[in-house]
Length: 113
Length: 108
Image (cartoon, rainbow over all chains, first blue to last red; front, side, top):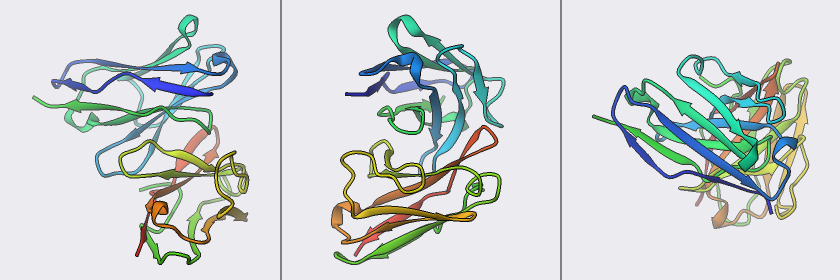
């Protein structure tokens, strides 16, 4: 069965970086795109962009350029989201989602001094 | 401000039929498929409807989707207490994915 398992919660200080992983299983990793979605506390879903798992080419939504980087390690069927220069407003749950269907369980990133 | 517009809340009593609307434009709903996601409290979103009106395996047929022009709707019949959740519509818009702001469904 398709599974997307994300790394655990992170507590970071402002200015630090964080890397969230999303390990896929149950399907051919390079056959489906991987999306990233942010959900701030008490808020709705916000699409951050996607990465082509064949070419590694990322597409970022407006507001997620510069400090946000999508990457892959196809040898271990894993997608990554790295956020640098963290700010308090980056505090959110970050989800990976295969194409339009399966979602990871989410990773809470808390940015606080 | 979300690109797709949903009512912030909806409610119904057990057994009732409720509908949730999603309004967009010609560049998103008007020319692409609509997806619906259910997010139960404290959990990740789950795909409920894809390609406007298709249900993934395991989703009860109490859930149905429809689309007309630049609007879409999700209908839930035979409402149950476990349907209490947030519901989001989504569509692609010129290679970018857009979501509605979400509708909180309360089962009274």
